[in-house]
Length: 128
Image (tube, rainbow, N blue to C red; front, side, top):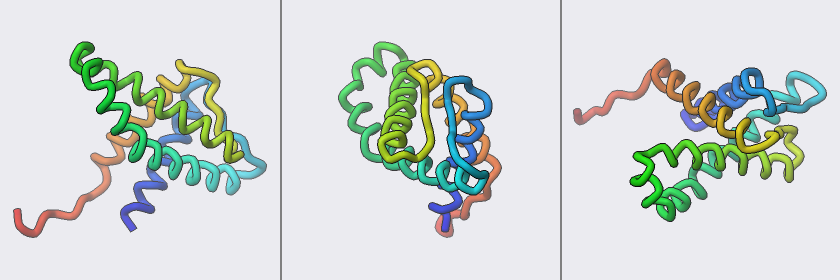
């Protein structure tokens, strides 16, 4: 159940990025079609961040150290852009024009997810 809630929250964060950042587009015939498209894009985004991002972080470890962590912003933008490319290949109706919209979209999604994490209640550890 928590996975589905997290997926819907990610979809909302992606929608927020389409509203705020120019160059990020969501296509669909109806509101319901756009919602399902966003949920599927959120699923792609989750898979990309779970599978590809750790590999990129491990390979680019030296760049993280040299840039004092700022390289993470570039990695997030590339993961966002990769999500858009995969979504286009799957005809999900999500498009990002280039690196800079992906960069700002990744920042918007990260901030939105951070705020949503603060607002959603968590289970307390029984042993703590």
